[in-house]
Amino acid sequence: MTDPDGERPPTCVRLLLAEDQSMVREALAALLSLEPDLEVVAQAARGDEVLPAARAHAVDVALLDIEMPGISGLDAAAGLREAFPDVKIVILTTFGRPGYLRRAMESGADAFLVKDAPAARLADAVRRVLRGERVIDPALAAAALADGASPLTEREREVLRRADGGTNAEIAAALHLSQGTVRNYLSLAIQKTGARNRAEAVRTARDKGWL
Image (cartoon, rainbow, N blue to C red; front, side, top):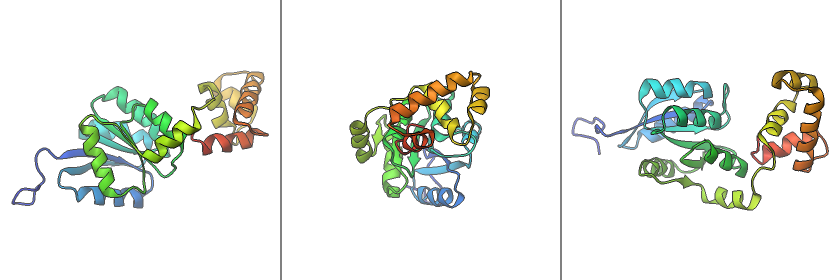
């Protein structure tokens, strides 16, 4: 509840909202700010802005989109968990991909929700993670169990990420590998994704949330 002067209570939860689409970010911030015990104290449009914003504003909970410029929300979550282990992390995504859920949990996220969830559910998730609970969209949890873990190794993922538009020579230079090694990793990734070529392997891995 607010006090008689309309001020928020001193125990108000301080939120960081990271989302690259300004209209979506502002809409979420407005909806969350309607909750009497929640306050959006910082916003970020890039993944690499998350850590500085969390440091500057002493946030309690960070709500992170997955796909952002700079670094992804999953990478930002991992950095945030290492630097500020007490900050709770809620991953928000438009793409309900089971592979994203697994990677979010590996990065230290406390909750994983799709963006089209009602604002009341998001606010409830914030309160629940502060109580020490883990909150996962039930449909995504079921899909992740059915889909299984990613068959790709971390190195195969790195090569496949760069294979979308990058030549073998460019990938080799970026990752300090030989072109023959890059070809081997790509071949393994194509086999594991059941694809016919590298472009299809990239699409399949992205659709499943493995990249």
